[in-house]
Amino acid sequence: MLMPPFELHHPTSTEEAVEIAASLMENGEAFDWVAGGTDVLPNYKWRINPKPHVISLAKIQEAHVLNANEIGCMVPLADLTSENNVHPLLVEAAAKVASSLIRMSATVGGNLCLDTRCFWYNQSEDWRRSIDWCHKADCGTGADCRVIPNQNTLCVATYQGDLAPNFMVLNASILLIGPEGERTLPIADFYELDGMKKNVLLPGEFLLKVFLPEDAAMRRGCYQKLRVRDSWDFPEAGIAASWLPGNPASLMVASTALESIPRLHTKEVEDHLEAGEFDPIALAKKVQKSVKPVNNTALPPRYRRSMVKTLTKRALLGILE
Ligand SMILES: Cc1cc2nc3c(=O)[nH]c(=O)nc-3n(C[C@H](O)[C@H](O)[C@H](O)COP(=O)(O)OP(=O)(O)OC[C@H]3O[C@@H](n4cnc5c(N)ncnc54)[C@H](O)[C@@H]3O)c2cc1C
Ligand code: SF4
Image (cartoon, rainbow, N blue to C red; front, top):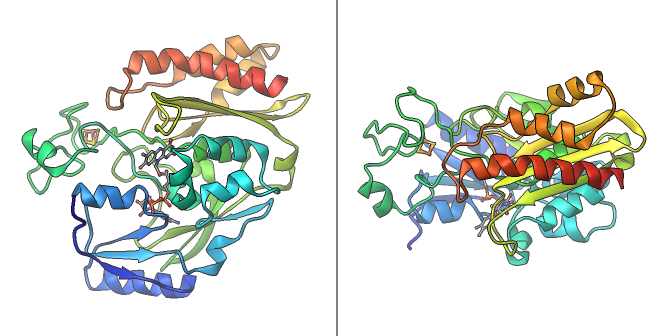
C-alpha cells in the first residue's frame, strides 16, 4: 500500500516544535506528531485519517532522556528493556509490547498517545468503504458507530497500549507542552473516555516526558497481558498491580484494553481494603465487575471480561511473592 503524500517537519527543540504546530494551526493545516511511526504510519497507508503535515519529535534532545525518574517521549521501548536503571515493572511491560523489531522503533510517547483501535476502523480504505464507513473515519458521510449505534458522537474504540496501566500503578506524572505553555498532570488523568478524542492533549500540544516519584523504585509490580499471539499482538486485556511490600494501603491496580481508556481501579481497591483483609481473589472479582469491554477487538468481550479476574489474581499474587 502506498503512503499518501505529506510534508515532514523536523524541529530540533521543543520551542521549534510548538512554533511549527502553532503556525500550521493558524493556517488551518492539519498535522500529526510522529515518534517511531509504528502505529501512525501504517494507519496512513490504510488511509485512516492521514494529514498533510507530520511533525517528528525525533531530533528533540530533551525527548531522549532516560533515567530512574525521567523518561523522554522518544525513548524506544527496546531501551526500556535493556537499560539498567529502569523500573522492573516497566521492563516487563515494554518487553510484552509487539515484537523485538517493532520495539526498536516504537517509543514511550507513541505508546502512551496510541490511537484507539476497533475492527471496524483498523482496516484498509476499500474494506471500510464496503461497509459505508463509521463515525471515527466517516469521510464526510456522517456514518454512525457500528459497535454501539445511535449514540450521537461517542466512539467506543478500545485503547490497547501496554505501558499506561504500568505507569499508572507507579504513580507517574507527565509533562505536556504546547502553544499555551507547559503543564504536568498525573498520568491517570491523561485519558478521556471517547475513542476519537482519546486524551486531554490540547491542539498543538504533545507529551514530552514521564516522571516517576522517588518511592516508585520501592514498589513491587506485576503486569499480566492477554493476547492472541505472544509473539507480537496487542493486549486484549491487561492488568497491572503494584504495592510497597507489606503495606496494603499502597496497593494500586490498573487495566488496559478493556475500554476507550486505561484506568486505575482506586475505588475497587479502597472498597475492598475497607471491607477487611487483602484477598486477591475477592479483589480480582471486584475489578472484573467494574470493566465493560465491547465487541471491537479480536477476542469476544465476554471472554476478555472473564479473563480480567484471572489476570488480576495473577498480578496480585505476583506482587505478593
Ligand atoms: C504488529 C504490531 C503489533 C503491535 N503490538 C502492540 C502491543 O502489543 N502493545 C502496544 O502497546 N502497542 C502495540 N503496537 C502499537 C505500537 O507499535 C506501539 O504502541 C508503539 O509504542 C507506538 O509508538 P510509536 O513511537 O511508533 O508511535 P507513533 O506511531 O509515532 O505514534 C502513535 C500515536 O501517538 C501520537 N504521538 C506519538 N508521540 C507523541 C507524543 N510525544 N505526544 C503526543 N502524541 C504523540 C502520534 O501522533 C500517533 O497518533 C503494535 C503495532 C504493530 C504494528
Ligand atoms: S467504536 Fe464505532 S465509531 Fe469508533 S471506530 Fe469502532 S465503529 Fe467506528
